[in-house]
Image 1 (cartoon, rainbow, N blue to C red):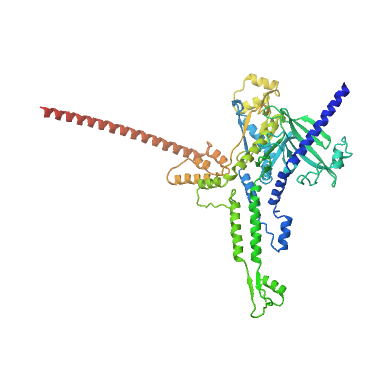
Image 2 (cartoon, one colour; image 1 turned 180 degrees about the horizontal axis):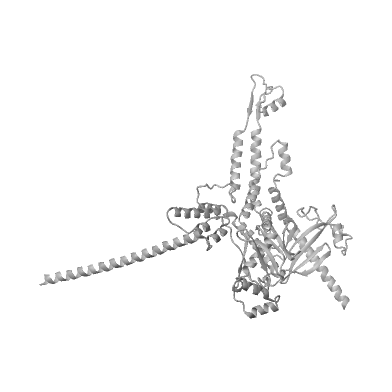
Length: 605
């Protein structure tokens, strides 16, 4: 019975190994075209925009090979626009009892982000989204000097694979996701000596493209450099995610349930991936696909126009020159000299009109490329108001708004996974250093254990009354833990990424309007001007202005109170005067009515 059960388990194990290997191969079989598109998009960005056949043809006709890489300028501008819109995360409490601790959650998120230089990681991923069409990272736990640390690694687009049936931009409907690396067979054998490495070099089946090689054109083994592919896969089974690592035909690490938990207590994979666009066949692509034909036209038109301008056509009668080849060479020189037979035709023509037509079409292509997304060259003038500049920037970037929505969604994924790792693995007391909103460093305590001695000391420093019972307990059991502050495991927060509008010009305009009001006689307290300014250290200035030991501040406050009191007295006096006038008017009206009645009575008599 035991032997039969053992064979059954071995069969299930072999079937599962074959299944995960098929998953990996299914991706490469189904994504040949999309990976070729991604490779070409990267080549275009790198300036490789002519095929070998095209270059040979141009050289044969002595036509210049011109590459005016407007496409790269466009992508660099978009990546720079993403960098200009960077924001820090903010954790908001979901329950009232988490209100005081939400700031600690924010500090934890910012600490991890700064520790991993997340801004640079996201910018690199954004470049992959725009060029190849998708990119992402993984959020894992690694061993640090002071306990578990959260590590964020960018996954290169050509070292990832996924369920080819997935259609969602964030891969949320994928049944498996994974990454792989190429490793020297000798190093792999030394790292995993228990594996059977005999015959591994016979598994070099063709992959169809060279996207993933380093690049070997094989699926499991590179016979040329004697390297083996190590594949990592996370796959869904029921409601749980599982992890495994394998080579062709063998487990490197057998399947196990994911060690990472989501915010609901279930399991999750570590990947945060996103795509720019997905077509109806599931192919993922970026904005380069839209720009390639325009870039080709720019290159070809410019090359053709230059060739026409540099080429001269000669129409001559037979015998007009004694040496045709020498005459042809002289014609192409700026200071060439051709001696002709008198009386015979020898005309030099240049297709200036044809070249001008090429340049006109070239200008149209350049304009089309310039208007397909935000323009790197601004048409704004210095005299425009801040609001006008902001509106023009918004209109200029509206075509790529959805792309930046995808990037923000990716960042939210990453921060949510960071928070999940922090809650799960940061269980001990931990101090982190982060930058506040003004860029100053500050320290935050997480999972801080509060003892009786700490409570007594805090009460004394705050000037609070200390009961004899508190002092006695603190003396008897000073190190007894009575509370845990900023307990990450118990926090329930929402992670928000605020938008980053271009408010600088608007803020400067509003500050200028405030100064103009002051010039017109509308006086405000000094702190109003500081708050409205864009001074870097305005918080420190405001603290000094609001300090009780500031005589200028006290005088300004006194003057403001006097002005307010005088205005209030003036308003009261004015109200009383209006009341007296109203009473007098009513009395006069009454006298006039009585006089009119008396006159009517006299007439009646």
